[in-house]
Length: 421
Image (cartoon, rainbow, N blue to C red):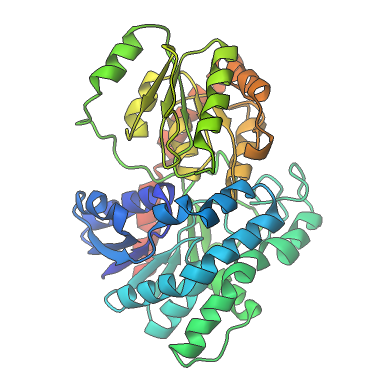
């Protein structure tokens, strides 16, 4: 059966879906990924087919609207407003591209960025639909540790459940439901869908959560059609050649820490870079700063700090002692799989949740939201991650747990079972 994976988002959204698609194709299933054009060559290098989405996620994140989203991401109300402003310009294009790509498939795999409209596409086209979120599904649970946004973090209580029903579950629909119904009515000539109808269909969908239940445990009160299987990671790129400058830097002193914020942008990257450099100096560590989409580190650097461009985390993380990053699901999985104590500086969305769980499990210090980041707070967190033996031991113990989960193999098994029903 032909499989379409909707992988609309940043590299952190695309890479796990690429890993899943590669595993499915190796099982003999033709796979197409719907991605932004800036990911086309990379995805095709793995032998997968690509459907091009017209919305360039990188340019979107670098726009004033994207910077505004990042700036206000720690505030749920402002985050919702910023996301709706982004979708006002791009949502219908995204849905139309998915609709066109879905004409040529039998199985549709969506995630948080596409579930709202994928439910309709699968229903109208008669496709097998599987939701594969990379963060906890936006569904209610009594379990605090399991919820994407619990009211009471460490409690199993109906207060968490009803907060989920009243606040968490409506969130995606409040952001994207309007645009879905425009598409349904204008292009499909179908009646508008209600939030209740959408949620009922989503709850009946096979949902495979692509992260570790050791980090965010699987809810005990969810039905069997929802499962949590482990992170989806690409095999390490053993052909990667370390740049000579990086090799020389590593040999010139103690093991450094890693700092990188991936696709997270900002209106003033130089000022942010200055803050990072001061925190590194105060912590007494050496550091590798990855430029990312924001263009960090484009200022004069001390000899104790090296700026690098793109590099595979699976290889780079073998050469550092701790990681500082934004807490995207993919980067969090990569740093923990490498056994690194992790400092999370969440900017928006589920990054806040990953930061909470990393701290709760003793895998890193308390997260510092981007809007509360200071030199002193970051320097203290870096020192904790780099120098706390208990944190280092727990991070190393997590490596074996994550390796044993075999998240991709389990996901492929569930998908193939669903394709046969």
